[in-house]
Length: 255
Image 1 (cartoon, rainbow, N blue to C red):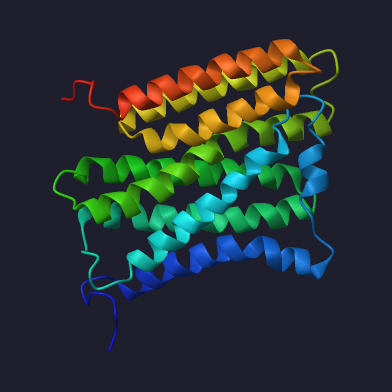
Image 2: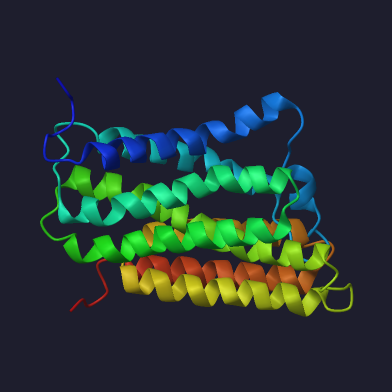
């Protein structure tokens, strides 16, 4: 006897669960080996743009949300809906990418980290775009477990993609000390532009909140050394939060 609904494809259902477990377990598994660590790679772009270390605590919330989504979609009480069908396989790609990125970063495969994190962000956003037309009629539980976990992941991967790209370009010497300031500003503005466009299209604040969180962490990290970058990041964070609240709130007129 299974505890998921018979109409749910078993391969898809268990692939979502496996991808979520892999995403959560990858970091502790790699750290237990004692040979692979993403810390050295992540710090190689600090001269261009960095976020305060506390920002990465958001992974705890994201991991919890992903596990909740993975377990929920297996339950018999969770209905098989067009929204779940639209989200499931993109979510497998996005969650698997979280684990693959840690491996690539630990191995210093710089180009691979960019491909993986951008691809994972794109997959998560695509899943949200595919699912959002089917949101009408979803129960509260279905709406919560589909859109909150993947929204948080997609938003965080968006800002993480920008920092990752700047990190790689800095490590390769393509961003020099002379160009670090404009590169950082371009990165922040690009995050704001992409984030605002996506959250407006989705109409769900969940995606924008992690971006605002990350931009505030950039402000905290860069205030002493790069005040211009810090203040631009703070203004971008406020703008991102405002757009997110408006797009996902009751004041927006929807077609």
